[in-house]
Image (cartoon, rainbow, N blue to C red):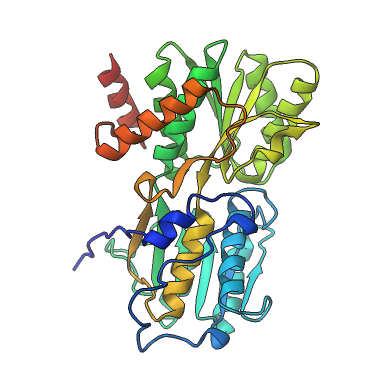
Amino acid sequence: MKKWLRTLTLSVAAAVALTACGSGDDAAETPAGEGEDAPSEDAVEAGDFKVAMVTDVGGIDDKSFNQSAWEGLTTFGEEAGLEEGTGYRYLQSATMDDFEPNLRSLVREDSDLVWGIGFLMEDAVRTIAEQVEEAQIAIVDTVVLDADENTYDNIANVTFKEHEGSFLVGVAAGLHTEGDKVGFIGGVESGLIKKFENGFKAGVKAVNPDAEILVQYAESFNDASIGSQIANTMYSQGADIIYHAAGGTGNGLFTEAINRARNGEAVWAIGVDRDQHDEGAYGDESVTLTSMVKRVDTAVAIVSEQTMNGEFPGGEILEYGLEEDAVGIAPTTDNLSEEALSAVEDYKAQIQSGDISVPSTDDEYDEYLEGLE
């Protein structure tokens, strides 16, 4: 029988922790679960628990998605008293061909939980889950289904409402653009990255219906040079603010924006996944207008703790959005106007109340535009 999709509601402790952002020092101090009922009989003693993750090609120093995941795993490991390298660790993937062997290696080491970081690992995770039924695997940013469209009992699926957070940075972009032209750089075009794109475009149009939005996909999450080239083209075409959802490729956006800012151009970049204010820093300034924060770090810590407590959410689809403070704008707001900050809070409330349904697909975006007319 097809499984019903279930949404995970974060505990109060996790919700408070989610308001922090950035480095591992800022990650959630108390993963969800503390203060709840005693761990189940399947719980693993903290000293014996082993958790590991496989990065995608961006690696743990991509200043974005993978780095946030590793920060979350590190926070969990340190608070659980685990040793790095034995209790918690990672394997870095140089290419997509490394996904399956890396996952297989960690499963063979009898890891209690193995993380696949990124939707690109879907096929590899499915293969390992089918071959090793006793494995406990968690994947970020996708839902792994079998041929009958059922979830797997040994896979926890962690997803986010990226379109909601992207809507908010779109509001900021729509209010800050001087030339009514902004841009979006995506990594690999997919349903996931389309959520970032369409949410952003909807936010821009909500406050600036006349704005033009340039969109281009790099078809890579790990090529800063391509990111720089696309940003150069968009800025040259008149865009003064560019939002990226491109992982390491997005680092090229900041390079291009900084170079132009040093030459006196008034351009901005919008970061993704974590607070990327520092990535846009030059001297005492930063070209980062704001960032769309996606708390992969907290999600990793929460599910790791659940698993250690014998509550592995296998077969579930865990979804994190504005309601859980799992997405939103970064805490660094130095470059945002009071008008933009006020508008962001107003639209956040409208989304949470259900007054605004943020589009995540191209069709939904087209319907959204019709509703604005």
